[in-house]
Amino acid sequence: MAKYEEVLKIFKELGGEIHNGFPAINSEVFYTKNNTPYLKSAGVVMISKPEINIDNMRKFLEGYKNGFEEYLEDPDKLTPGTQLIKTSAQLCYMSFGPKRTKNKDARKYFDNIMSSGHGSVLEHSNYTFLFYGISRSLTHELIRHRAGFAYSQQSQRYVSGDLIRFVERKEFQNDEKLHELFEERIDRIKREYEEIYSILKEKQEKEEIDILKATKDDEHIKTELRKKINQTARAIFTNETEAPIVVTANIRAWRHTIEMRTDSSAETEIRELFFKVFLCLYLVEPILFEDYEIIKYKDGIYGVKTNWRKV
Ligand SMILES: Cc1cc2nc3c(=O)[nH]c(=O)nc-3n(C[C@H](O)[C@H](O)[C@H](O)COP(=O)(O)OP(=O)(O)OC[C@H]3O[C@@H](n4cnc5c(N)ncnc54)[C@H](O)[C@@H]3O)c2cc1C
Image (cartoon, rainbow, N blue to C red; front, side, top):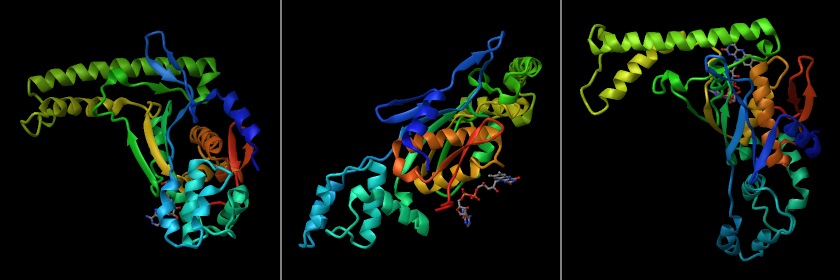
């Protein structure tokens, strides 16, 4: 079982910081000689987590006239996401009386939920992350996870080339030749993108290529024309193009995806990302992630394992 101190130590070693209770592991931006921006690791920033007011349940609890409102006086406080799940689960059996599991025994309560696979209650608590410094090939794998997830990804059609950045794979970073090739490649891609962009723009203005024409003559025409150029010019981007994305998911979905993507067989870039997600979620909701064990694989990248997979 992962201990809080162990998780916090690794989180800090990876450059993690907690601001107002929200963890973040940021990633530095580097530049080639020709000023092409690139990043070397995933930035993982928690931007939303649950806020609760279970005291608002007072009238409902009082209505039973058998002292259920005493539930609200539990002296042991849980984190909001954990309390939300526990309260929701306790509603199922109206476990609000004196014989209920008190907050001090929350660990035992959640062990029971996890070991019996009653995972639907974990769907109540949602957490949103901004991921950046990750490649388009990573997000292509990430968005295969559908159940319980919401995504908003930077558009390569709307956003033009001057905001595009790249991600250097770990395999290239400490090898002089591979690193040099990477920098040359992204400089070339940026240069070619700009060249293709200006040729397309000229041809579009002269109406030389039908497929570049706007479909409608309305107030969105400028945006449509720009998107038609961007969507063509982006064809030269490699998988190592950065793809910032905002991702929201509930605890059940995060747990399943952490298990799949930190497995030894997972691709290394996505394994690194999901290990950082695990660290951030653990630090916010320790009780919901304490069953995980941290593993450092031979390739130097961490992963996690649990006996209660796919709750
Ligand atoms: C190491 C690794 C290698 C992979 N290699 C490939 C590959 O070569 N090619 C490839 O195409 N994909 C590959 N994948 C992707 C994989 O097949 C899944 O699509 C992806 O991991 C999403 O997981 P999931 O199916 O559990 O879906 P999620 O959306 O995360 O859903 C969670 C769970 O909800 C249930 N669920 C979700 N949607 C449905 C549904 N529509 N109907 C019924 N139940 C549902 C399932 O129980 C599912 O496991 C790979 C994944 C991993 C981790």
